[in-house]
Length: 116
Length: 110
Image (tube, rainbow over all chains, first blue to last red; front, side, top):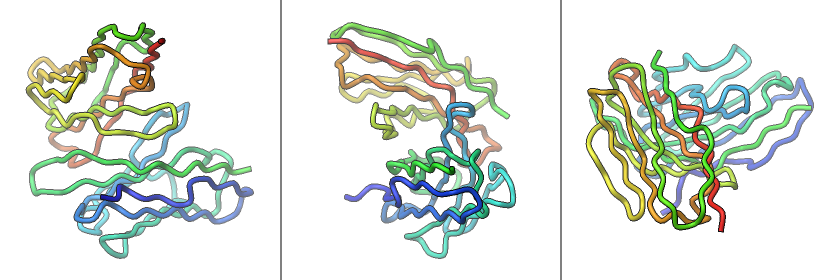
C-alpha cells in the first residue's frame, strides 16, 4: 500500500515568493497532520484535520501560513509571502480516526524547504 | 502544555548491545507514540503505546502511565538501528495533538 505522499521533496525559492506544499494521505485515513522540523524547535505540530475539517491550528505560526483539505485525499500547506526563517523540513502525517480513540500516525518523507 | 523529556540525549553502542531509552512526561496522557527517524530523515512509527507493553521483533516498549514514563528497549542492536528516536505524547485535552520530545540520537557502530 502506498504511504503518505508529499510533494515536492525539495523546494528552494527566494523570500517573498508563495510556496505550496502538497500531501496525499494514506487511503482510508481521515486524520491529517502538518508538522515542521527545525534544529532550534524540533518537531512541532502546525495543524491537523479530522474528516477534512481543521480541528487544531494553534501551531500555525502566523497569518502567512494557511492549510486546506478540499477532499479526503489531498491537502495543501501554503506560505505567502515566504521568509528565510520558514526554512525547515515540513512533514505530513495521517492516521485513522475513531471517535474517542487515538491511532498511530504515519509520516510522509517530508519536503525540505529553503527560503533564500 | 505537556512537557516531554527524553534520555539519554546521545547513545553510542557496539553492534549486538542492548539499550534502554526513556521518556518522561509531565501530565496524564492518553496518546503516546515512539518514532525512529533514520539517517535519511524518514520518520517511522514504532509503537502506539499509551499504556502497557508491546513487542515487535528486537524492539519493545513499556508505558507506565501512572508514573508518567515510557521505555523503549532495543536488543541486539544493528547498524540500521542508528538514528534519532522520538517519544511523542498527547493528553486527554489534546485531541490528536502530539508533543514531541527532543529525541535520543543513537549510533550503532559495527
